[in-house]
Length: 160
Image 1 (tube, rainbow, N blue to C red):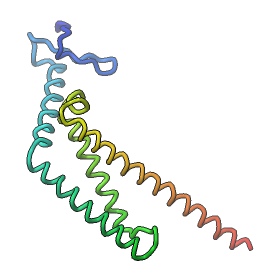
Image 2 (cartoon, rainbow, N blue to C red; image 1 turned 90 degrees about the horizontal axis):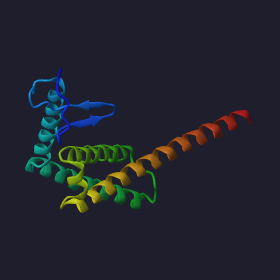
Image 3 (cartoon, one colour; image 1 turned 90 degrees about the vertical axis):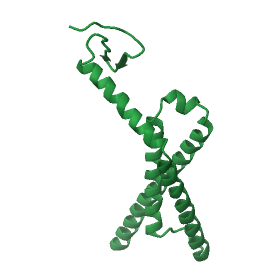
Image 4 (tube, helix red, strand yellow; image 1 turned 120 degrees about the horizontal axis):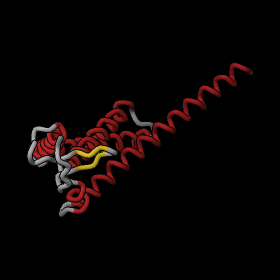
């Protein structure tokens, strides 16, 4: 058997301990810990790359353009109805920003992400993503309610 060594490299996940055994580094527990560490390092390299930053800079710019187009169309038509294509694009941007946020959190430690030197930008990112999701849920709820009311009014007309 292996020796249970509680070191800073030991982890407890649920009721299971991932054990680092310096004498037997080929144990399954050690392998799982190394895999997690390697995965986090890979994600960290991706999110710290210039290509990642440029890609999401372009996402932010195109999202700003879409919001401008959406606002212009709504102002011109004096309507709150958003064209379906623009509504779908809103959800695509929400998913992209959520993926970016999750990758940035996964690519570093939680302590570094939430309390590091760039934490104020991270809080802003989280607030923007959360606002996107809240808006999306509110839109979905209002759509479902409108459809339910529309069906009820059609049924009332059929009864009369």
